[in-house]
Length: 431
Image (cartoon, rainbow, N blue to C red; front, side):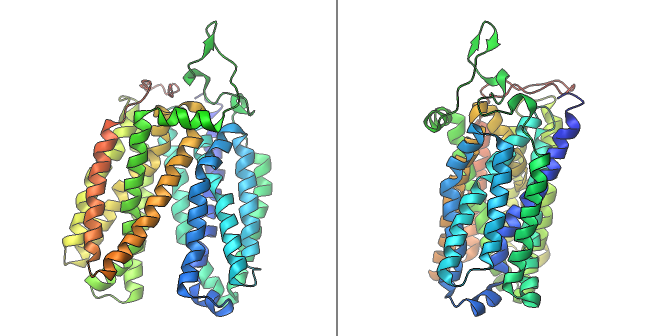
């Protein structure tokens, strides 16, 4: 990466960090105001849960198509359009008059938000082609963590000003930021058009020693290219099993802390979320920085860092599931959050090594789809285990086993092209 391009590459990460925070804040905020919402709009607990479920289902199912659109068209404009639409839908959520209208708005919000993450991570990869790619991805992913943490503001505003007020505030905030982003966000100059090749040096077709003119990506071609790679299949299973572990911990840890250590609801919630959130935020930065530094001397560094992290995270979860001391449980949870997050910072950089550069956003969308499906099943399985009077610790043990399998799968991933580079920071030869 040239010196004059580097400042703009980090500017892109910075402006997208805000969008990432809004992305998770807007989607999760509704879960923090249950009492205020159900009093104003009568609904059962099942209906309240359905507001989140329908978002997740639509979000997951549309992710592959959304990723393809990011490969086919201008990524920056798609990001701005996605932010604008979901912000308007956030505002519209606060003006819904009944449960049916809320359900429709949440489904549409899942559609509009699905377009963001594959496009954003692919755009960051476009700008960060050298030994800054994993750290840049990790920094961006911390925005998701911060957005999740800030979602609690919605519940506080609902108590003070009514449940509709928070949706008005953050809806119009997103619209205003989308207007600003329109003038700031751009695809790289060499990748600005829909027919531009994402990374010419990665494309096999050449004429007379020069890259051939790229044709518009097609969804069928993209899917065939992705699924023809054994390493992509490994990543698909890897990301799905990792979703099992993540949803098992996130969905049932507050309940486990409450019952295992006789904490009240507030103490259990804080213990189960605050330490984990801080550890995961730190892990995304550490995992990104470590992978970038190591990649200067080892072409598989971005593959090895997540594997090492999972081999540490698995016994940490087992410690949590077996200990009778709260301090040890918190330590295990924190170690898990720190080391499991190495994967978040490196998934897109790894995808850049194993997939055709033209289809990386589509690939991330497919991975997202599988992750959402497995995540939803995991949450349901946790409830089924409790109904069968099986302890949640059993689910945690299954999560630990899944992470060990994930680590082994990651070790089997092979880049399509060697991306070894010297400390000078020359661009990677993406697959």
